[in-house]
Amino acid sequence: FRERRQLEADLRRAMDTIAFQLAYQPLFSCDGSELLGFEALLRWPEGWEPQSPVAFIPVAEESGMIVPIGAWVLQTACRTAMTWTKPLKIAVNLSPVQFRHGDIVAVVQSALEASGLDPKRLELEVTESLLLHDTDAVLEQLTRLRALGISIALDDFGTGYSSLSYLWKFPFDTVKIDRSFVNDMTLDGKAEAIVNTIVALGNTLDLKVTAEGVETQAQVRALMAAGCDQSQGYLRSEEH
View (cartoon, rainbow, N blue to C red):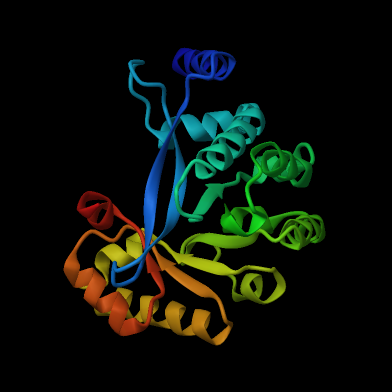
C-alpha cells in the first residue's frame, strides 16, 4: 500500500514538473526498406528511481492521472513530429480512461491545432479493452476522430478478447499483431498460423497490418512471406 501511494505521489510530481520523457520507436515497411513513422512511448523521468511502464501506467489509469498525462503525450508527440524533416506518421497510444473522462476528441483537436500537425500524420492506438463497455459511445468518439483525418489502430490484436466483431463494427485503419505471436512464430507452427491468419484477415478487410516486437531476421522473413505490411521492434530500432 505504501509503495502504491509513493508511486502515485511520484506520478503527480512528474506531471507537475513535466519530468516525463517520450521515446520514439521507428515503424518500418516489413522489409525494412522504408521508414514510415514513429510510435511515441511514455518513459519515467531520467535520473529518478527506475519504473517500468508496466508498473506506473496502470497506477496512472486507476488514479485518473492518465488523463492529463495522456494529453501531455499527445501535445508533445505532435510538436515533435512537426520538427522532423519528412512528413512521417506519429502514433500515440490512448487509454480507455481517456475516453471515459473528458472529451478525447477535443483533446486531440487541441494537440493538432497547437502543433499545426496534419491530422493525416497522426495515428491513435487503442486496445480491445476500450471496446468492452459503452460500445455506442466509443464508436461515436472513434468515428469523430476519424472524421478529423486521423487513422485508428487496434493494438495488441490476438490477445484479450480478440472479437472479430471489433474489426467489423469499428472504424480501424490498422491492426497490430501482438508481440507474443511474433516472438513465437518461427518456433511454433500454431503461432505462425495465427499470424498468417491475422495478416490475411487484415488484407481482406483492407487494413494495414503491423507486427510488433520484431527482433530477428527469421521473423522478418516469415512476416514478409505472410504479406505483413509494417513492422516495429528492437531489430529495426538497433539497425537505425
